[in-house]
Length: 434
Image (cartoon, rainbow, N blue to C red; front, side, top):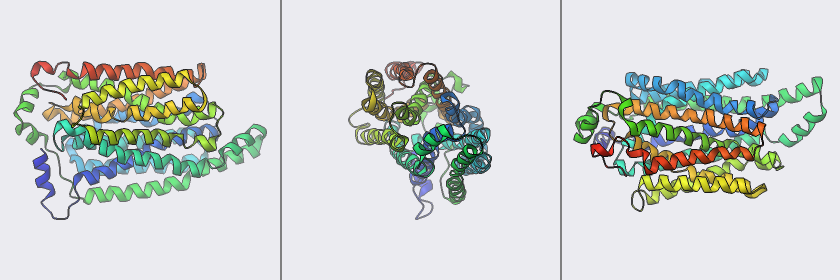
């Protein structure tokens, strides 16, 4: 497969390597996705929401992955990867544009609609790009390539909340204090002004996404031909004699693993600002905490690039991440104040190599079912809709500190997949996993 792509990229001299284009898309994933970490406390103020209501931001964004993942696979079969990616970018642009009337009328349901449309577009992009990176080279080094993409994602994730936070949360603490004493028209005017701060940034985001969609459409990005992939690999041929993607147990368990993983990843990034505020840390300081979580993820990606597969296998990396997640989660629960916040930020390090390790383990041997398998794995991102919402409910029922008990069983599930679940239904077929 790598040879096929290499030939395709050499048809025109000067053509950008496919990974450069995919890296730009991963940057977009990170930028759009991690904006929600700022939108949660922002909308909690602007629309006067409780914890559970504010985490509907994550729910609306990520539940679209569940709704759109399988249709994304069908779409890609019709359009191919390149046109599908372009269409996905246009969907994200449309969702960003919805923020303009949402902010103008301070209508929370419109914000949620915009987030849902953004997530739908990203579902198409994720369904196309992740298997592309996985197949673009030897399977045992796929986690290293995905880690490179993760750096693009993580850098954007650091920049996005810092940039948007500086714009829309610049005087959040003062506004929060004023809301305690104002009422009537004065309070409404203050909230309308806060809501309006989001309009210009999202107009810029919309225009940028449209331009990128045109660029991808006109690029020389080569297609992945699953039929050629299967014919060129006898081992794949044996595995894909199955008649349904649901016959691959290791894939289905990989979907469940990614479901709980995306939940804890979003909890680590999206709750840390509100958690800092709960501990009495000013929002002017806490708004940077998500960036610390993303720095932890970047460090993990760099470790993956250096160590996989030379010093450790993808499966070993998955075990280390699971153990680290349990230890850091318990550390956050056992401590208080800034130390507890640091442990939550360190969950970014524990999360870093889960996604790049599970994808190749779950997709290996799928052959002609690769696109549909990818769709199911992308559907698992809906865990980021359900699990953080459960965290919000627990935070309202108990408190924002004790609600972090939720992450412990999630990391235990990740560890189980690394030790045993990845080989169920596969080892007997003689497929070696790293």
